[in-house]
Image (cartoon, rainbow, N blue to C red):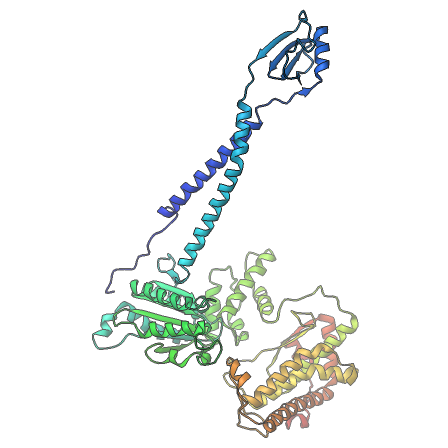
Length: 626
């Protein structure tokens, strides 16, 4: 690098501020201890004695039953003649001696007149006088400390809350991240810019100011940003977009200025803004007016990114899964010069990710991670990490020292479709109904040619469902045809149609509620977003989900007549799918009974058992013509 290596400033608990605070605490504790001793001395000096009447004392003294009387003022301390009797106290009348009040002069009692001690009274009076003063002083001291803390917070309100990394012992590098090879190749150039800036400046190249990481949640955007900083051996400021915005106008912009000022002092370095869409949404939406705090913060980010001087070597990495809602000024060259798309991992990458997460776990050699990678199409790296963690948890719960293939499969199913709820009590009628319902899904999904193969069928409740028919695509797919969507719709409706055929139309239950919702969503997506309707073929009417204000204030881009056609198209797709499922189930009713019997007996059947049970199935000609 062109500059000295970055060093974090050491500031620990032994700083001057902390020492001063410790001294204050010690003084405060000493004051409390002295106050406690004061109260103890004022109230703890007097000996607790039984008090008797003065007339009784005179009578006993004249009889010779009292050995000694100690007089201090008007207080009497009586020592009995018999040792087994306890010492007592009494009180005489003021203004005359004990002899004047009835004690005979020739009585065999020793009278010891002592000077009255006023020490106890003095300390008691002093303690009672100082008590409110000390209490008020302690209260004021606490209030001043609180006010001082709030004052410090107020002074630091506009300071950046970015966390600084750079001196960790275990840094993240590209080799620690499995998959995402294309994204790592794009980010390797950023590492070169940070390590060798003069190499590019010598030929007139301008170092990119910003790189936008775009991808679904859980694909490793934050990890890639940290790996970039680790490869470049540069400090790494990390902050979330939501941490800029506060309820007070101007605070977010102040934090942006402070963050970029710190970054310039520590260059070459990386600023990573996670979930930048929280502050970088498109301006001019009308929400909050021109003085909206979020818009002011975004304006300050735009100014800071465009204000970098050549040679500062500060690169901004930002992550989002909603790049479509970002402001165009933020995405233009000169600010975010590059855009790195991080997609869901394919099968090879999934296998690499699984091996990375199982690397430090006691996984048996017989565990088939390749088969698991094939079954986890459409999952993210975070999902795969969760599967590995669940596997370890299940192994520990079962008391096993190694993770077997059975445990890995069970962990995958828990993550994908929820844990089994075997303790849920179901009547025989509900079990049979569930078996027919899930059998209908499995039968239609198996018979229709463009449906995903059935992986597992169970009537054991999982998650919020009463049973599950699980279909998994045989390979990763980037595109889907109309036939695939139509077969998926028929498979979704197979459970409701099976109930209708077995129990009658008026006996169908609420068990198909989730299926019907998903079918309606898929049918509407086909018509509105994919142009797969009949009358509206190749026409889309897509509205951006993130631009809520446009959906509320702007008119739709199509007429009421078109909206009616869209509703009719959706209804037609649902009706068609239900009819196809009905024809498949009617023709293959013996196979449905076979699946029902197997589910009631075993509760769960896998793909191979489904194929055996459905041998001899028939495809109705009418169902294949749609």
